[in-house]
Picture 1: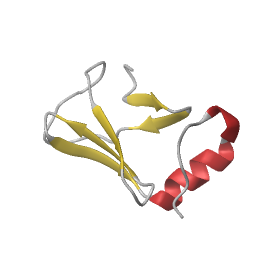
Picture 2: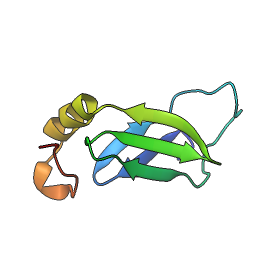
Picture 3: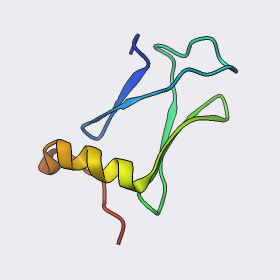
Picture 4: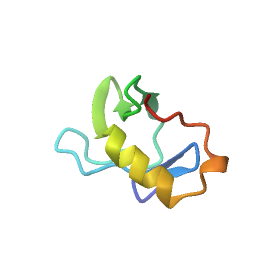
Length: 74
């Protein structure tokens, strides 16, 4: 989006400002769900955001779980 957010499995994730990239608004990014249930956002091979498994769990609890395909860490 133009506001540096992405929608992933029902979650809205805010990409923080970066010194490396002036703006990545409306650009294609790669979203990775790591085995520990954390999420990383990668742009042009660089990690531009990381959300810990705790942060993901908090976001999931704030949204309707049945609409998300994300898996909680075991």
